Image 1: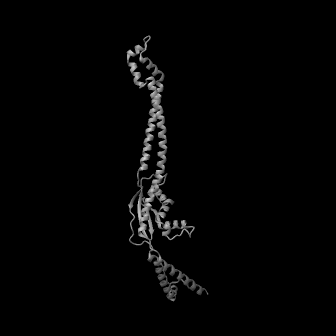
Image 2: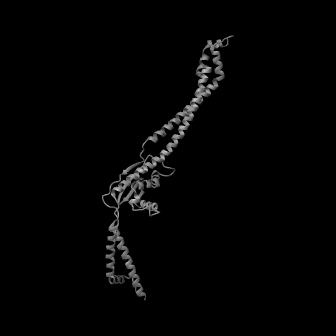
Image 3: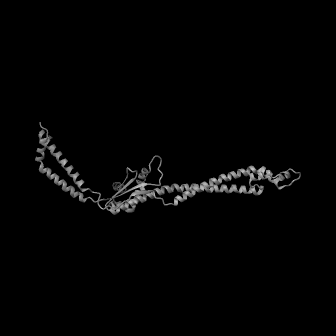
Length: 314
């Protein structure tokens, strides 16, 4: 038995059903063309940006971190609120209890972030209005910068708070040590231990007076004070030097954190600025017509083939 899929058989079947196939072709073409004109046009705005002034976490690259931050809920919610996208997409929160899920799906459909081969990020926005698409693309970059700034500022605020507490603590400790040193100097006359010892050792007259019977030379009490309180003086001096070093380094760290908090840092380098589209991106009408006609003709041929095969089998 000859197969229905033989070339001659196929040609005969096509000729037999040519009117029906022509009708399917014309009908699917007309319907798809008509349908494509009912689809609202969308315009595309695209930006390409590099991340900058950020510190990647662990093995994560700066671009991967940027992609994760761009997907953050608060950035999406900020865009939704700024442009009233719930109303813009025709979603009624009063009648739709799942309105947030719907608006999230709409955003995912119309807003996309993709890593390029040059280690940058492409931000693409589709919207019914070319002006709105441009504004949304720019606002995403703005909200990304704000998000990174907030993250960094939270860290810097904690650094400033902690270092300020340490700085004040060291300042109090330093004041206490310097007060003790002042009292030691006033009470015992120890101003510079090493130089005073050197002076007394080099001054022969003072040394002679010290060992003369009944001497009351002022240097006698000074030597006694140096001998009895010299160790305390050296320890205090070392403690003061160490406390001052810690205080200065902590103060420097605190001032850097405060300065960074006050800086308006930009965390994106825009390579391709978003622009207002002058022609639609969607729908591609010829592609819709082509797919519709192809699907309709394929279905028609399948039905015809099945019908003819059934006849042959009977």
